[in-house]
Image (cartoon, rainbow, N blue to C red; front, top):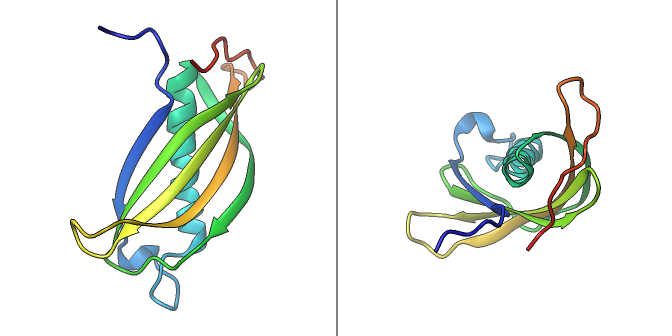
Length: 129
């Protein structure tokens, strides 16, 4: 039976190439943040059916290094809804080889705001659930 509920989760998969790495051969933190922000954007915009912009990122925790060649999976979940904003929790896990056990590497929350064509905040228009 189809659900009228908005999708609250988005998953992305990336692979860490040399141009994503820092001088130590691990994923550059700025690249991890860019992927996380992209995942948050996709989750929030799908949830509300509008264009969204990033208003804030909160408490980004880098737990372990992600190495060159590892597969990265990002999971972004809308966990809160305000009038025009959505809080999106994002986790970035990696696996050293295909099929290996994935380990959490980075996590954080992003606040995304629904906007109109002029860039003004507009109501999200739906709730979680």
